[in-house]
Amino acid sequence: MIARRELLIGGAALGLVTASGARGAIPGPRRIFLYDGRLPASRAAAAAIRGAELVNTQRDLASLWYGGLRQRAGTLALAGCTAYADLVVMQGIAREERRPIAVAAAGPALWSWTLE
Image 1 (cartoon, rainbow, N blue to C red):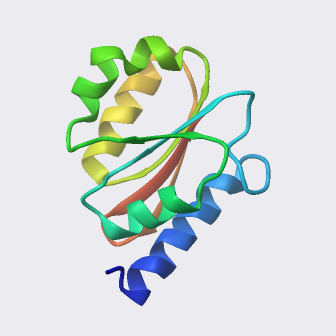
Image 2 (cartoon, helix red, strand yellow):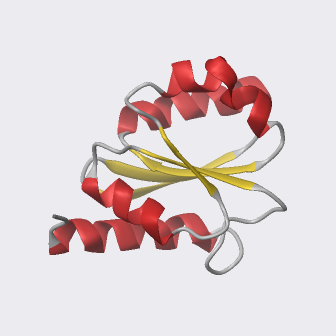
Image 3 (spheres, helix red, strand yellow):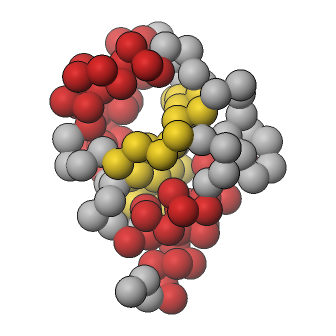
């Protein structure tokens, strides 16, 4: 069961992720939202997203990215609400792909980001 605190953190994360795009959805014709299924607040943020493919990082964003997500993602709008380790991986991916990334703290041990 999700605690009230986790729900509030997830809601804050969702607000940060959607603030850079359209209201209630990640911007773009096709979207991918990455979340960390181990974190209740991250799961709550994912549950609130509409119009995007939801992808659980399953503790290893690098393997997920280089294992096929990279080809599917192309130039799609990517956003996420993840732990710091996944944020660091995504920052490296952003540099590699030469795409800007917007980052915001979403709560204790939780970061929201958008790859533009």
